[in-house]
Image 1: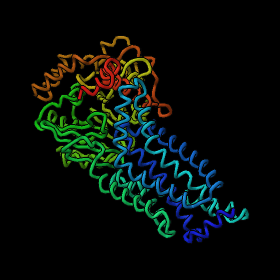
Image 2 (image 1 turned 90 degrees about the vertical axis):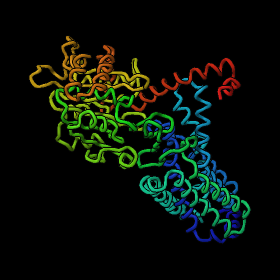
Image 3 (image 1 turned 180 degrees about the vertical axis):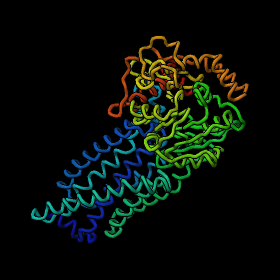
Image 4 (image 1 turned 135 degrees about the horizontal axis):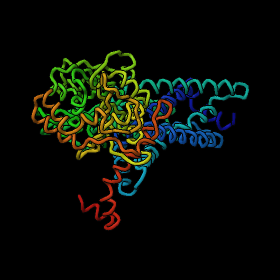
Length: 566
């Protein structure tokens, strides 16, 4: 050990025991993982929590830690002063404490700037820049902790490996707790913002203990404490959607950010700040004007309409519509997020007699032997279909749970066509299971949604589900059922509702067989289903379309032109 280190350690009595150094390493490791998990929850409402976003988070944080370790090691060798190490720790703690207060504003600012300047890969670039600006600085500082502690904890080369091993163990144990506590305890209980404050508070307490015990940097310590307290008071007062007023509910579950908004004619649930509506209940009975109306063609396309299974129950929008128009139908729901199910009962008038299982849709199917006339697949992980519910293995499982002549309806969400698109892949995959002749799709007017209907062969039909020849497509059962007069006639006979009968005539006009180009599409399997990447490309296309008028104003009139729009 160098003379400088010995002198500094002697001056700071708190470091005479190695225990404080090990405690520092423990809470440093905990804070790193808590910040990483917090990063995913902070970015998710704006950019999703897809594997792509997780990759950006992990990659940028690992870069920050690596650079911090290199720089911290050099600093420890050149200037082995523990005061500077704990000052970096205090700065990191204060920075993390400010993330819930300022992070969301920075994300919106970055998104607003990029949406009018970037034409492709908007979500990836925006998420990357946001992560770099918000999380790289404090994680870089935390990356300097371990090499600095090794310097101060090592007395001689004889026990150097043992010291490094103990520090590594403390860091790993802290990281384990920093992984499990946010996910299963703090985020579900108190939310992402308070989670940042809890773990930054632990770091700050560590730094303050060091400086107060050493009677140095007391002014900096006081300023840090004031900033932390101010953020702790102000952060919970503003939500992720800070521009919204009068939200009925805003909170988080293990899986989602959740927002309930009351409008004049409906109540809506959103699980993302920037993308769409996930569930709705109308204040007055009737159609919603959303994709659920189009999906009501499924009971009329099916040979029978006695039972339905909804994978991705949400707050029960489709179930309520089925109950209204098909009151005798037996309905079962599966929803992975029990918090959404709780909100359904509190805000969305979900029928209490419809059983809802808190389970992953595919796992539920694997454990069930029941069959249904209609199966609605409307499960989404943020903005994309979960990969395990997009593969041939999954759709084969769905077909096995349909009665003969039963219909699966899939909300494909995004109208995205062309070679390599997500809809081409999904359509081709479903066609490989049900047969191309047994599939119809319908775009939903004034939305980004597309509904796909796939029908199993009825008894004695003589048709094969897996007939992909495309010959005689007009003879397909679902093609015939999807014709306007047939769809309206079945709807009228089964529901006796004039409004729904008229609506199904309009839906029939939008039903069409899949394009021939889908025959060569990528077939999604459990081994290869890049739906998140494909979905991200589809969203980029939608964003590009919506943002193009603003880009044109920026090109022709500059920033002043955009400001004049306000």
